[in-house]
Structure formats: C-alpha cells, structure tokens
Length: 276
Image 1: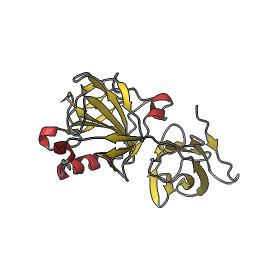
Image 2 (image 1 turned 135 degrees about the vertical axis):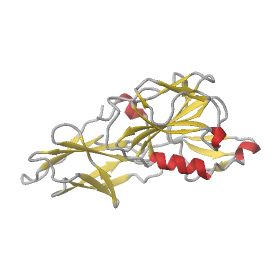
Image 3 (image 1 turned 60 degrees about the vertical axis):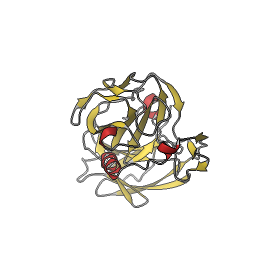
Image 4 (image 1 turned 90 degrees about the horizontal axis):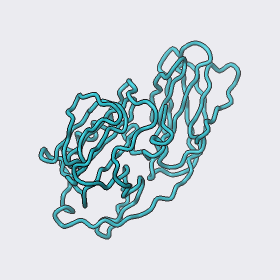
C-alpha cells in the first residue's frame, strides 16, 4: 500500500499538498491532491510539470486532485512540480524511480508486417485519448476486463521481426482468451470510441474506447465483436464485446490500455489500489 507524502508549507499558505505514491516508479500514475485550508480556491487549481499544465478537479470538501502520468520512455529522477490554488503557488519535488522492463520478440507475417494503419484510425484514436471530461465516472479500483491469463504485461519493450522498436513500449496488458469470451468495462464511463476493422482500424482491429472522465480512458482492442455504441454509459463489469484477433494480432487476446492525459500508464496499480 502506498503512503501519501504531505508537504510542509508555510503557515500563511492556504493549502496543503499530498502526493501518492510517495515513491513512484516509471509507469505509475502520480496523484497530486490539494487540500484548501481556508476558503474555496477562487480559480481552478492546477499542477505544472515541465511546462505542461495538469488540471485539478474537485473531490470532496475543499479538496482537488490532478493526475500525472509517467511512462517507461521517461527518464527516472527528480520532478519539480508547481502546485497552484489560483492565488498562491507551492513547489515540491518528487523522485521517480527507475524500473526494469522485459523485452520480447514478435514475428509478424509479411502481410501483417506491411500494414501501417490508416489516418482515419490514428486520428480517431488520438482524439479519444486527448479527452479531458470534467466528470469523474469511475469509483474505486478498476476491474480485470477479461478472465484470460496475462500473456504480456505493461511496459514490455519489443523486437519486431528482429529489429528493436526504439520508441515502443507495450502500452497496456494483454489477456489471452478464447475468441468471443466476454470483455467487460474495467470501470464506469462513457463509450467515446467505437472503431471497426471493416471501417479502417487496421492496426487496432475492432476497438472500444471508454472515457472514465478527468483525462482517464481505457482502450480495448482486437475485439471479435462490439456490444456497445458511441454515447452509451456503461457500468463497471458490463460486457462491452468479445475477445478476438482483429487488427495486428498473433492470436486471440484482449489488449487493455489505460491512458492518463493521453499517456499509457500501468493499469495494475489502478486495479489493486485504485485512485480516488
């Protein structure tokens, strides 16, 4: 279980800051919570890291929270965060630990290796990952989206047909299961993307994207079928499709990618510890 880090701040400051996990590693989602000790902040609180602003969303009382992704391609080390309640600003330092990720060799047939994907596919997926909906739809830890066994963990680096993919890491968790076996929503949300192989989703195959709110989203790909439509609201555990091998896939499996502000983070801490 992670332990939050409450920063010591001057008595004149109007808020306190808590960071979880206190010692994150690459792939973790860093939660930064602002607790306003006086009046409600006059404008939207935020966190700035490396020139990028992450919005803070209200939780309960005078508490606000921002989520900051880290990924395997990042450099470990010190992160300098600037936390603002709209009137005052506090600086704090977070140390992100290194993490060892395994490598894997994938061999694709000539016909699959030549598939590059379509602009339509990439544009739809990129727009989905960029969503930052103010509402928070999820509640508590996420669920396992398939009962299949884990065939590939998050963060694996790969060789494709003997060539190392320099900027690649496995952006999710793969579950190997029989074709047609149920795929469930790992958390509540809105169906914001349905993409079909027949409509140009050559790489992802049949795809469902769930907007969980506040910059958090799930993408579930290679499906054999899709049981939902865009705009549907789904509950955690609701069946949204079936395991398949559409798109670039070497066999029937579900790929579940969890994104925070368009960056693929490790889903495992979200399943076992959850994020408020």
